[in-house]
Length: 245
Image 1 (tube, rainbow, N blue to C red):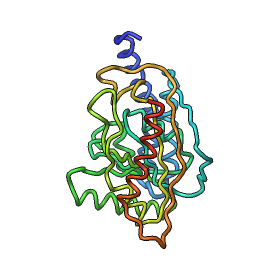
Image 2: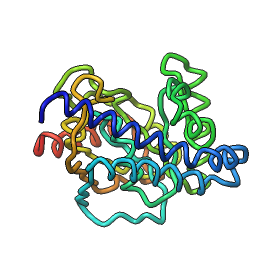
Image 3: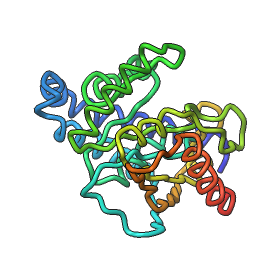
């Protein structure tokens, strides 16, 4: 597909997102005034705005499960991160109510701002105080039975094609301290359809393949170390990523 057509496709995608977001904005604005009460409603709008916008430009998802997932319990969901399409991939995949933890810069984005001011959790990477507040808020949501999505790499790779980079510790500390299972998710080829925000290579129609691995549970009676869990999750995800990449 020529680069000019990929650039046009990317533009059409963003127009699609803005169109549906604008249609829903008055309702979202009202709901966001009381996110505690309307949490599930905001999650619903986030899901369908993102999915319909992708479907209109010919992007679909294919999910493979290592084993069936019990969606009646909360998880700390840990996906790799190569594209802004990963966000929609998670909204498509997860039938639960959940919040993203993401960089504070998303508060400046006209679409993601309303979600990160209501149901999602912004964090400033360089600030220990911001990280502590994000950790505390995520813990509160987990106790309410909601799941948390954390991209353990912490960013999208600056190099193309992207690699699976070393994980940061936050998700694994949170899992152990709250006795919550980690759900590893490998998003295989989103970067081939739109790498990062598509500003360099544009985007194209296609099918994004997702592998959902077995949840990793914790035994509260065992003295588990978060770094050992981090290594275990990384090795399992890396094996699946390398097999299909």
